[in-house]
Image 1: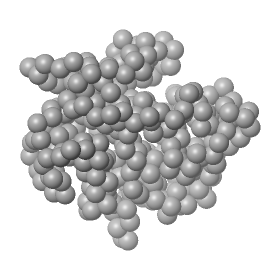
Image 2 (image 1 turned 30 degrees about the vertical axis):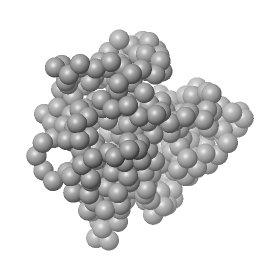
Image 3 (image 1 turned 180 degrees about the vertical axis):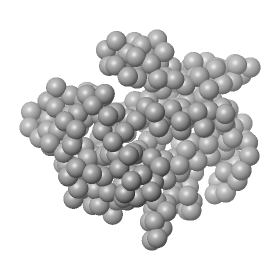
Length: 313
């Protein structure tokens, strides 16, 4: 994670305070959830990715950044969120904490909240472009990291706004003015809210040796989430351990993500966040010098590995 660049992105978005009232974010949405809230919300996310012109890496071919998303749901009173807080530190929010921060006048109980998470898998073209690289990221991958994440930001706002207009107040945790990076005694650099952990709670995947989330569509992806006052049946978590889908942890073999990392930030001992941060900063310099792009993009540990596009176990 590039702390410097991410902080700038979040500061730019923080004024939105979770929900944006301006702009045409209702372009492809109905305004009522109907009888099946999970199906309604899932369709909002899937259709947005399929139809929005913003889902693009903005190259001459105007290629899409993301394939069809995966969507999962967790209850706001799921004990897993308190467990995250206990493991990471007191600065890590539960769903009720971030909802109450953004909607102090709205009474809510944890069981009345839902955490809506999604996974945006990279297209095969983007993955193949980086897969052949050894030390420097490909242009398509960097474009996907920059412009694909801009779409992800738009998607977060769109989901939150659509839910709020339908009578279900919703907040984007990473857009909150209170969002911050902190230091976890156990894990070092950490944030108030983790998109990957929200997705893990929503049944969408488990963690690999490099800390990436391995999903049914692989590890080459990004994810997002919204917390809303709406009751939705949780997505079952089809795993018992947070490393269950990783070949290294399940069999003792693999570790290819470690050999893929140009910075040596991944070893059999796990993920060195500061070495990873240094590598991401280096890719930002590379992106500007070689492609005239302002942003970073690494992703070597997400491509050219058995978990790139599937669950390998």
